[in-house]
Image 1 (cartoon, each protein chain N blue to C red):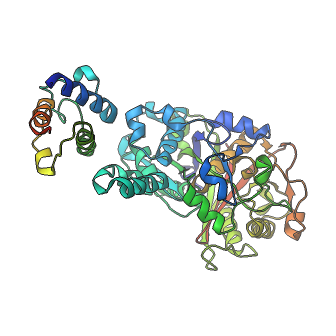
Image 2: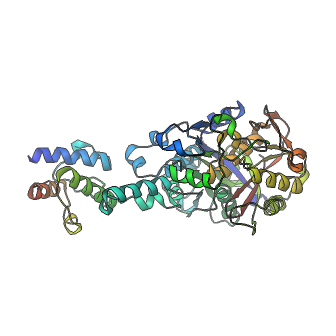
Image 3: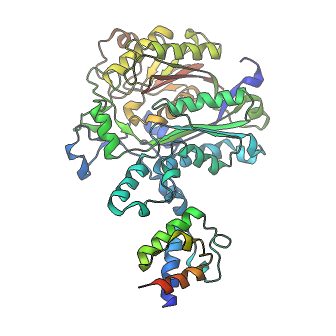
Length: 413
Length: 79
C-alpha cells in the first residue's frame, strides 16, 4: 500500500495506566524510570505465591459520571477514559466526520472478570434474583469496544478482537485494514484490561507465569534479565485514533506518526508456550516489514513484548535478531508498567509512536545482568537511561496465549 | 407514610439511575420522563424489594409505569 490514499496516520492518543492517568503523565513516568508495581496488602493475598500487581494511578470511576460508571465493568471504564482522551486530542469530533464512517476496534484479553466473579459471589450468597441485570453487558468481552463506541458515537462498526495479550495490537491491525478497505474514515483502536482479582492471580500463578519477587516489587518485572521469574499483572487501557493521511492533512490534524504496516501469524505450536525460536513471532515481524515496504535496516527501534517470563523473552529475542538484526534499539517497557494483557499492545504502540515523535527510546528497567542467551546478548537493549537517537521507523510486537503474534510498524510523521 | 415511601423511592432512583430527588414526583413516568431504561427498572425493583420488604413479580413490574404507581404498589403490598 504505497498510494498516499492508503497511508494511515495516528492523530490521537489516550491512556490510563499504572504510571499515570493520561498519556503525558505515563510517558513522563516511563522516561523517569518510575515503576508502577506494588505489593498487594489485602488479606486474600497471603497464601498466594505471586503477590505483585501494577495498579492504576487514577481510579477510572472517578473520571466518569457516577451512574455511568456503575453500569460499566472496570475494564470498560478504563477503555472509555483512554478513548475519550484520544478522541478529544484528535479533534475528530469537531471535524464533521459522519458517525456512520467512524469505527471502533477495541480488544481485551480477559473481559469483565471483576463483574463475572463479583456477580458469582452475589449468586452464591443471595440467589439468582439478586444478580445484576447489567451482568452480561458488563462481562462480555466486546464490552469495552461497545462502551467506547457509545462514548464517541461510532456507528460504522464496533469490533472486539480477543487474542489474549495480543488483543490490543490486533485491534490496531484491524483498524489499519478497515481504513485500507475504506470501511471507515476514522477508527478508534485500543485495548483494555482490569482483572486484578484473586482468581486470575491464582490462575496465572498456577501456570508459574508470574514473578514471585514479592519483597522487591519495583524490581520484579525484569525483561531479558538473567534473574527474571515471570510477569507482573497490570491494569489499564490505551487508545489511538487512526485515519487516512490525506484526510488528516485536509483537516489540519496533528499527526503523531504513521502506521505503516502490520503482520499477524499463529505459532501452530502450543496453546500457551511460545515457539522457542520465536518462529511465528519472526514471521509476524517479517510480514509487517513487507507490508510497510521497509527493510530490516530501516527499523531503528523495537518496543518488545518481553513480559519477563523465562521462555518468552528469549524466544522473542531470537525472533527480533532473526528478522530485524542486531542494530535496532530494543526496549521492554513492561519493566515499569507491568503486563497489561489485552491493553499491552496498544499501550506499547503509544510508546513506540512517542519514541518516534520525540526521538528517544525509553530504558528497560531492572536489566542488571542480561540473560546469557545468545540472542539477548546480541541485541542492543536500552537500559539504565533512555537513549536519544535518530529514528525513522520502529516495530511494536505483541504475542498472546493461543500462539497469536502481531507486529506493527510505525514511521515518523 | 406515602411521603416516606416517596422519599425512599427517590433515594433508590438517585442511586441506580441518577434521577434528581426533586424530579421523582408521583406523576412522572419512569421511561418517558425520567429516562430509566428496562435494565435499570429491574435494578430499581430489586432495590425496592429489599428496602420496603415487598415482592414485585415480573408481570406486576410491567404495570408500574409511574413513580405514583410504584408508591401505590408498595403501600398496598407492604407487610
